[in-house]
Amino acid sequence: MHLKTTILRYILKNNFIAALLLLITATGFSQVVVVDSTGVVKEQKAIGDMESKTDSLKPFKKYKVEGVTAVVGEYVIVEFDIDMSYQELKAQGISTEDVSRCQLMGKLMEDKLYAHHAKQDSLVVSDNEINQNIDQQMEYMVSELGSEEKVAAYYRKESIDELRKELFEVNKTQKLAAQMQQTIIADVEVTPEEVRSFFYDIPEDERPVFSAEVEVAQLLVEPEITEESRQDVIDKLNQMRTDIVENGSSFATKAVLYSKDGSAQKGGLIGGVRRNSPMAKEFKDQAFSLLEGEVSEPFETEFGFHILKVDKVRGQEVDIRHIIIFPEITQATMDAAYKKIDTVRASIRDNKISFAEAAQKYSDEEETRNNGGQLVNPVRGDTRFDLTKMDPTLGAQVYDLKEGEVSKIFTDSDFKGQSSYKILTVTKRYEEHQADYVKDYEKIKELALKQKQIKAIEKWQDEKIKDTYVNVNNDYTDCEFSGNWVKK
Image (cartoon, rainbow, N blue to C red; front, side):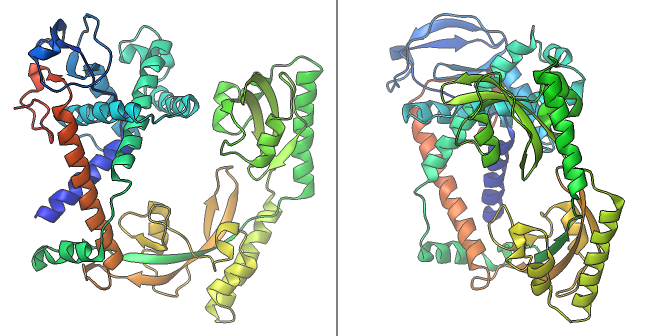
């Protein structure tokens, strides 16, 4: 049915936005290149020989490129870009079994178009943000292939630096494309009448079926960190600092050996820290209070205990190295935490206290405690979770719970690897049902808005393709693209 087709297409596009190295930029020429079926740029043609409408980027210089699949404006897509798109889909856990090279090619060309106009509209992304993405991608590829050398060889690059340089442009294009799409749909809204028309235009037997949903509350008890454990961590960091400052030990080596976060493999390096970076205030205070080469005293944030060294000051940014370690949790404190939550659970089941009151009084989770333990869906921003889409671990814990029923005690682990105990309850359950205009108005409004956004993007794309030089390699001209890329 038309509704399903439209919605699935929208979802597919957004999965690509989130998952691919979207390789963009595009358009603009006074001369263009011609690509033969082997993927080699053969010649230049004056713009008058190609199209009556032009855009405004600088003229081409003649060049030869192996494996070219398309030219959009003055930007080139090569086979490597499609290969990397597949790799990114896999890294995001998205199956590539039914994704064709034609589909990826079409998405890459769209993104070239978006990026070009993002530049024209002066949209920018920070180099630091791009480099963080590249670090994550490299970590994934190394974990898959075994070493940086193998990664470079797999992508037929002479060095890892050459690959990172290409990835930089790919990621920059991805970010610009996403920003341009958001700009296109930023002012798109739907009125109540449009929502009503959208819903009632769908044949009754084709209206969407909404999955079962639940609202969930949580109560969490963490084992106490003793003063002895805290002091032990501080003593360890002080000893490391002494070895570094007084004995000449390498901060980077200490970080590799002892630090407990992802930066350890890079010697604790975090580049491009700014005063508005999304980091703990205590961390940034230390980073901007030290001179280049200085090492901080041990300090604590909500994430653990740290020492850091300022590697380099670059204007409003600093490159730092840090070491983070966590206090040890004793079995005695674990046992005490379990006993506490077991007692609270018994009181709830005996109706001596409500779950919400117990969460407010006993839960150690600050984010949910004041709301009676109620969890918020991070994707939708409300309290409802689709059972078919929620985190598998959480879903398994609440799937069979009835409204008001309290779960058994679960062991949970945080990013520090420290264990805690939690109990859950389903505060509201919504069974699977066909869409109802009154009960499901907000969801229907969301679908209507998405459809209108898709139409806005398609209209924008159709207009911009007409004004942009596009040349698709003969090997791809038979692809069924969503846009008129071959200008038939």
